[in-house]
Amino acid sequence: MRTNDFRMVVVSNRLPVTIESGPVGFGVDPSSGGLVTALRPLLNDCAGVWIGWTGTDESPEIEKVLREYSQQSNFELKPIFMTAEERSRFYCGFSNEVLWPLFHDLQSRCNFDPAYWDTHLTVNRRFAEKAAIETRAGNLVWVHDYHLMSVAASLRQLGVTEQLAYFHHIPFPSPDIFEKLPWREEILTALLDFDVVGFQTLRDRRNFVACLRQFVKGAQINARGEHLVVNEPGRTTFVGAFPIGIDFDEFAQCAGRADVDNRAAEIAQGFGGCCIVLGVDRLDYTKGIPEKLAAIRHLLECYPELRGKISLIQIVVPSREDIPKYGELKAEIQRTVSEINGRYGEPGWMPIHYLHRSVDRSELLAYYRAADIALVTPLKDGMNLVAKEYCASRVNNDGVLILSEFAGAAFQLQGGALLVNPYHTRAVAEAIRKACEMPQSEQRRRMRKSRARIRREDIYQWRDAFCGCRAAFEQRLIAEGTHAV
Image 1: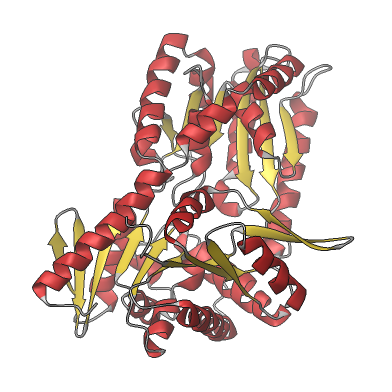
Image 2 (image 1 turned 90 degrees about the vertical axis):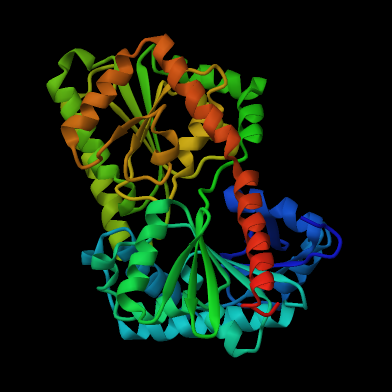
């Protein structure tokens, strides 16, 4: 990627910073996460802007602190603001009561309120208007995730002819699920206004293509090497699968620090030699936390010899608690933890240690290092980076990852992880028992295989693969004379 004359406009639901109000005004702190980790150095190299929602009410002071913060880097942060009603209907409504459950195969949780769709279009238009102002000739506009699937359609209406790319971070459903969406054709045709559309897995790409065949008449789909080209009158869209990774080297180096090692030893010592099983999940019904707790209950009931010898540390990171379904889920988890501890706990030993809070990076790494087993069992997940973070943190090449076969990461880690169906309570319990008894030699063989794959297919490889395929596709279209750039 050329650095001096290339400029990128990144568009995501949230900015890569957290804005908090303090006693002397607003403060800005960098956010963590794979997307930020991957794109920040790229934008520093090539320059550009990052457009996203601040998560706050509109304020000239916030715009000022963002301008000042932007001076520390080679790219600018451009804020989007929303009214309380827009936040309710766009973010809580269409994004998280329609698209999120539907795309995770949980259509019974959807609320297809027509007002949500109208607000989705309004807010996507606002993102597009901001991006149109910031886009220069030769720029790449890279839009991220399901909140903003209609941005390209608005950008085309606004006359933007530059290359538009989109990456879909969550699963894409099969046609029999997707057809429940009242605005299915509108979403699909809006996505085809992008020049490049990327998905996490081949399964997601297959589902997208199957939906196109069923719901978009006239779409012609052709293979181009490992990827696909969708042709419609007047437009061509490149479709590929690009599994997102993590910054393996950063995780491994930080996990090997002395302070992390000491903290991990303290955590392990506090469990008195018990086999530690770790769960780290955002509060969300797609993460399979109640199903995980059911497997722990079954394990303790069917294998009483493990009582007092195994403990689950379940970290639940607060999320979307202003949405009623999430508040209900939180109450259900707390109730189930209390019931299991009340039934099976003994003086000096509790089967489940429940933490409902965020943890900072160093503390999380210490938990990764202390845990003998990571239990990562979402009901459906686009990728799941916790699984990869756990493996990257196992600097001694030990530990066992138990992973849902419905996580996008399962394809990459199937040779090292124990794959399970999170709905199969007995099978998950049996996998935990097997992991507890797994010889060190087998642990190391599996973990080395997983870590090698994660190191090879890291966040930078993902970024370069996406951008590289975009560039190759651009050259192909120029040569074929099928696309004006």
